Image (cartoon, rainbow, N blue to C red; front, side, top):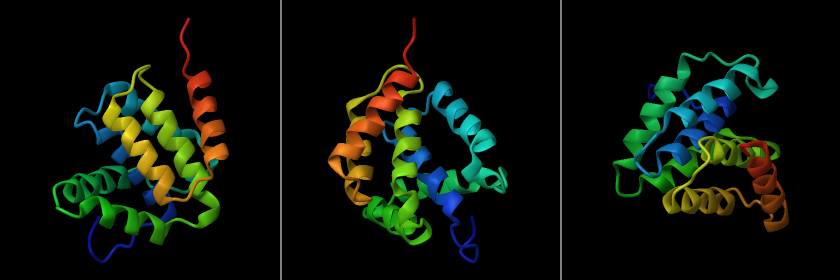
Length: 139
């Protein structure tokens, strides 16, 4: 992304997913595949240019290197994302974190941060988390 290209709502959704995956400094293949799969198949991304994923990811990585980068990232996300998609963002983040069947404390802390920053009601968050958990169960 360039400074002249504002973050779109879809970019913001991608940024949330990337931030949760990268929060433990270990973006696993299953998490990357989950992000790609969701971008390719979910209606919210129907008109999204998938070439933007790399630029959005780089923006997230760059902000992670800055002292107040996480606050800046959430500012960008809230600025680009309509409030009606806040729960969608949280659901996508939960799906990414659970995609590989394991999650680190850092990833769980990032999910808490996403929930807090986007003002997700605790009961709704619990339902979203449960849905992600059951969708990613293995035999």
